Image (tube, rainbow, N blue to C red; front, side, top):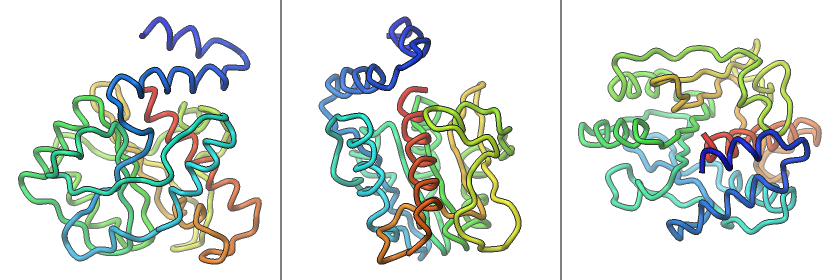
Length: 227
């Protein structure tokens, strides 16, 4: 499989081959190619951004002409189904809290090949950082350089994670947790990629801004599945 990945990544027009690989990988465990949304405790709105993944997955299907799931699935970290998904997603505005058992499971999940995309909808930063410090007390979030592959995996973002909504003002940031030289968590802050991917009647962003959000989300999705 490693040889196949390396070969595909050196083909100039490799998008057609990329999802051939994803299909091969998907058939090995009979799971749909969708993320799992984390249903967390603490009172925060884990359930928000209801159309976000519908639109991201629709773009993936249109762009690469393959079938993916219609929308994300949602589970608590302690549910047995959680570990069946290689890509996890967490977002919200309010408090996030993991139980001691969830901390243990999430550490094992991310240490054994899982990937977490966290998107601050504006208000979850303090609690998310607190809980992830329990998961990986030895790690710190670092700002990823603009040259990082996640910004160039299919679409190119030469200035890093795009700015979608103002929130606290100032630039957007893309942070990562890196474990044994592998990015296990990508955290987008002060931008709100998720809201940018919502239906236009929910967040009526200018179309170029909305496309930036969708393209960044596609990059994150592809990066997570192939790294």
